[in-house]
Image 1 (spheres, rainbow, N blue to C red):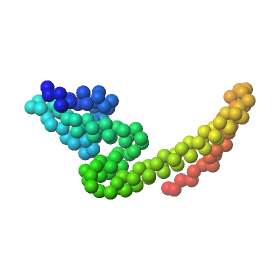
Image 2 (image 1 turned 90 degrees about the vertical axis):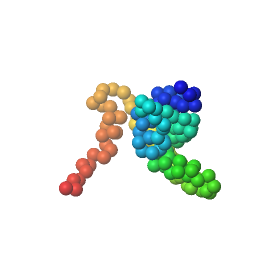
Image 3 (image 1 turned 45 degrees about the vertical axis):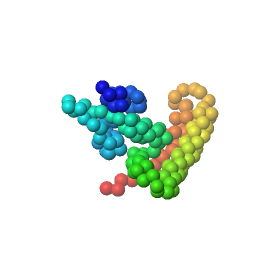
Length: 143
């Protein structure tokens, strides 16, 4: 086989991506359809490898597929101003920073509950008592 092409298994291995994920990215149009052999096997090229690696990197940074789709569409317009990419990245950064604040607050609250623990029995556990104090009012039904 020509070494310029990858089978789906080889592409999966080289990019550390599950085969089912590659098929999914194809089905939603993030990854272009590959060539097919006479026996209907997929043959991917270096451009597929680069695109899949790009998608994987974006996913590792937490970008949702919808934003990855937008960014990929912008890569097809090399003469456009990069402000659109900047806007997507800044929006994603705002979400990450908000989550960091929420997690920091959550960690602090949990740390306080753990620090207050004096040991003893489950019946006396202050961590369980503190966790039980939150949201003890039933939610009213809207039906």
